[in-house]
Length: 71
Image (cartoon, rainbow, N blue to C red; front, top):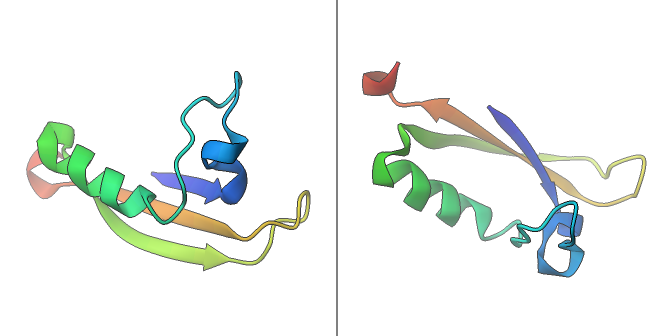
């Protein structure tokens, strides 16, 4: 699974349509904790991509992969 995240998805950008609000630098920790607690997945890679064309913000792609025993 690929999850795109920017600063617009952080606490400051949280709202009715996107209520989660987590800073991009916290996301690896959250994926680690959630995946370890029976999620059946792990964070496989973090890709830093060029600024998005629609808002000029730096973006990160978090790549999640199923654990071998979950497949």
